[in-house]
Image (cartoon, rainbow, N blue to C red; front, side):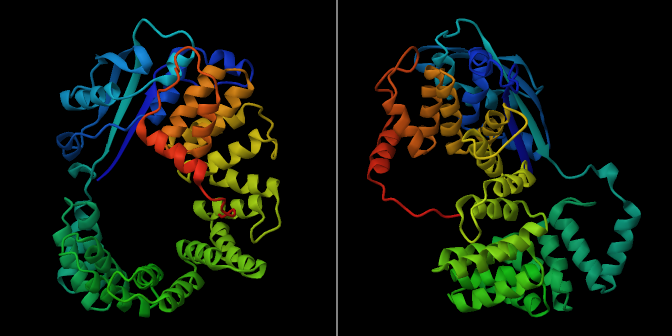
Length: 432
């Protein structure tokens, strides 16, 4: 069951470039950036099982060293378990950025948690006629209908989700030679859903479907050979099946083949050949393909170095790359390596990347704050980036003199270890 939890400060807003640093001094606005670095709350099991959601508004008071001294529910979601989960999350959050404004708040600050449960479609939305007809065909031995019914049971479409029933219907269709069902059954065996987890059975069914030209089965079989999940490690077979899948047009296989090629490339010609596969995935508007093709232009690996082309590709992947494209484009804009008609676009993009918990985004965003003269807040954001594992953020944090709410000596042990590793880390060549 898919879930999505968002945590945003109620007063947080996207800020224009004019007066950027000054307007960030509002603790309520700064709070949104701190929240991005906090651990996400755990969705209560009962609420998740029942498909329950809602909105919980929490008020907190922030005390010494950015720790929450008190928290209470301002507006309830209507469920005590959701409210308690929101409170528990807030109590463990640190707000260095709020303190760094130099105006440690004495009152209550608000934030809202939006709980969304990806529950199965409601029974009243079922298409009874379609379900009855499909079941009739499946019971009569139609492998297409059997596979369709299996998919409905797997995903909870028109029926209550039941992986055991899904596996049973997939098996009937797979035994009749349906390649889609064979791959689907292989996936269930690989994950242990509705059937015992069995890597050899997974590979057996992947191979049946792959021989019939099923692209995902070919890619899955390649994965099995690459990592030896069924007991046989064979990179030549892995590349052979992955190439067949990529040649068949599967964007995910084209991207993976290109990335493997880049890892193994020893010459410019080999890198160019590898990037050509990534470009084929990008041509299908695959978000990851667009991002990594952009990286190839940004770094000059497999393509001629071209920042404008990299920026154009990153733009096409915005909102679809888990913050990677936002970070990459924001980095180019902030460094003046790409142009934008909007002077405030770079910080906004970096804020979005921070929401996706990209550690480097904290470092890049804090650099902008530092350039705007907001040194205390910059230091606080560097600390958040350090706690998320970014070396540059950790090094910048210890270099900056403490002031206001970010005293010296507040590094915890993991960050101290990170600093030691960062200072001793070897220089590695750039990679996609």
